[in-house]
Amino acid sequence: MSLVIAAQEVRKKFGEAEALRGVTLSVPKGECVGLLGPNGAGKSTLIGILYGFVQRTSGELQVFGLDPRTQSQAIKRRVGVVPQENALDDALTVGENMMLFARFVGLSKPRSLARVAELLAYMNLDHKKDALIHELSGGMKRRLAFVRALLADPECLILDEPTTGLDPAVRHLLWDKVAELRRAQKTILVSTHYMHEAEALCDRVVVMNHGGIVANDTPRALIRTHAPGFVGIFTATPALRARLEAAGSLAVTARGETLLARAATLDELVRLQNEIGVEAQQLRPANLEDVFLKITGEELGENA
Amino acid sequence: MREFLYLSWQIVRRNWLVYSKDFWANISPTFTEPGFLLLALGAGLGPFVERVHGHSYLQFLAPGVAVSSAMFTAFFETSYGFYVRLTFEAIFKAMLTTPIGAREVVAGELMWVFLKGAMMTAGVSLVLACFGLFSFVAWLPVVPLIGGLVALPCGAIGLIASGTVRNINQFQAVYAFIISPLYFFSGIFFPVDAAPGWFQVFVNISPLYHGARLAQMAFWNEFHVVPALGHLAVLLGYAVVLIAVANRLVQRKLVL
Image (cartoon, rainbow over all chains, first blue to last red; front, side, top):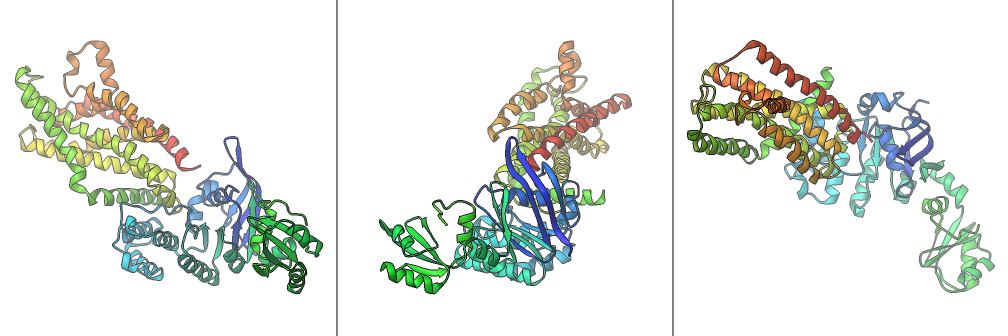
């Protein structure tokens, strides 16, 4: 199986601060990998290192068998990047931004014209071709930054929080496009805070925290290992925790104004609910968010 | 190499595209300032000044003013202009995801500054030629080249400043303590050979002095091969050294 990304013990220091503390990661061709982690976990640093925007301090790294430290240009010919900031050229129109980038990635002028028209239509931006960037909504800007990365039809896509801060409609649109790219056998590395999308879309999820990888598996396996079963969400009231525990919940966790009680099956959870005589706000299968909060230690008071 | 030039050239295309959108607004200070300067000093002060090296004061002033426009356009482009592109507009964050790398950015910005300097000098010189300030018009095509060669070291100074300053206000100090003296003490307002020795040494430091001397030769049709080659060598030497430093500093800003 050929690897698109092969990282071994990659470290990055900014002065004294260690942003990456030995990241080892393999991404085979055609895989869609989700990169999760709290803000400041090192996701963007890792992403920047992959295409030579950030220089690693130590460790081995190959992208398409090339070293980003010395061969970033060759890597960037095969990788499309959606950076965290849109970084669109405000002085130019939508069409001009795209045409300029088409030339950056080496498309000829006639090819650029065709490709830009095609991609703007693909993102429903063709009617905005002559609009200036500041005339676009946040969602439109993000869509533009997204298709900009597709100009050269790259084999691999690196998406740094492509949907952060967008309304649900744009978010779904963009995730649909990611799904399409995945079906087209592209290798995808996507960092996100949207667990639900990562769970639905990624073959594998890598969780980072404090500059290191703390979990790396398929979403299902992660849930099975770290938070199996079902979760009942209860409005937190005094003594509820003790009652849930007494009734036999596998684990009770505080999250904001709520208490989360875990049980192996849905039936068990319903029984628990009946026994304490309090109706849950919601009963649901455990999901990636539960895993995330548990293994990044954001959730305190775990007693399982 | 072809690839390097192609990618660097794309930066020029981008900058030109943005510049040409507000062409008249962008180009107006380049023409008004030398125009007002020549009017105030040449026509206003000139009558009180004796002939300088056989030229009227206006004739003496003209070549230096023409190349100084290259110096200013280059410095402002690579200081304020580049810094805004780098920090506030963050356009390189996207550009550097394409095959363009930091060295192409530096090369492209300098190619742009060279052409812009050449364009400004050509424009100003053309206007001056219309007022009969050119002795031998066949030399006119040489002037933009001189402008470009002045723009390179001055553009590199701007890039070095961009790679060094901690915020945009600090360019004021660079302008006040570096660009201003290089301009005022470049021998474009007074003949250097009449100044005291220590002062001449100081003037010789300014890249603008060497550019102004070359421009004077062209404007006055007074070419002397050896001094001309000397000034050319100084300009190129400045360009090589300053560009090397600028390259290092800007790379450090672009690649984390």
